[in-house]
Amino acid sequence: MISSKPAEPFLDHDHLEDSTGKIYIVVGNTHPPGAVIAYLKYLPTSSTTPWCRGGRCYERVVKRYGVDSVLRAISGLQEELYDPALGVTMPVVRLKDITAVYRPRDRLWEILRRPADPVEVDTAMAFERIRACSGVHPDSVGVDGSIAVGIHNPSVSDVDLVVYGCREALEVVESARGSFEEAPPEVEAERLVRMAEVYRLPPEVLRAISPPYKRLYMRDRKREVNVMFASDAPGRYGERILVPTALVEAELAVEPGGCESLFYPGAARVSRVLDLRVLGSLRRVDVEPSRVSRVVTYESLYSYALYRGGELRVRGVLSVETPSGDLVITIGTREIRSYAVPKRLWEGSSGS
Image (tube, rainbow, N blue to C red; front, side, top):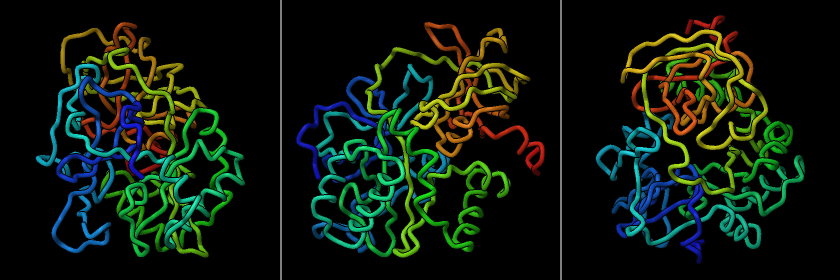
């Protein structure tokens, strides 16, 4: 379960444990010197909880997803560091404090060799369904969440799989749903209500933009399955630097089908700016819409909308990227409530 190669690059969805027993989830593949961008997920506790192993139980710190919810949940519980390459403050774990690394692919191999309980059996079955529909190689799939660190509970744990690599992501993204069933209507309705509270978007919009590889269901096992995607290439820190300049709302034509949009952070190329409005300036700069080259999202809900492309309405932070000088709109940071929604959905919803 614990990696024997802690010197390997840290990739999105790796899990870390520090000297106090806190467990963190790595965010992205690019990290500042001496630290790893990661958020606190599980905190050791003396109380009995659903998440336990070896006599030690854990409290789940992050109970609701969405960038704002995560940042509020971890506030004051871990170090945050201003990252000049991203132009924002990020939660980090110092390398010197890491005592264990849990790699999703290593953990899945362990489960496939010898599943130890019903959740691990369901994990192996979910993997086989993914492999049957896509042909993806076992080396390209890992397991995330509480199962990755061995604190899962049969009554509450979902199965979260991670697919690594561009070609592999494109093989799985559209085919995964065909190998699973739909969740019961009451489960789906409850999910949309919770999401509307977090993202402040109408349920009909959330239903339309929800990725087809999330909230899958194994009806015979009564187990939810989620599929996520990650690049298997470590990033080069400082290769691109973003300097935030303005808060904007824009309508963009986005190029479809790029695997980078499925990774974290998701990124898609902009082919044309239809409209751009500055909501507030962060520094003096000439905003030339024609220089907007990419949309980057730190909110995974919008990754599939970027992958599908077309005309999108987006709201976020406009940054100057160096050394290219291009403009980039970033979604999912602290400065503004942001989103990326197909223009036709926005115009037809109560969000307009």
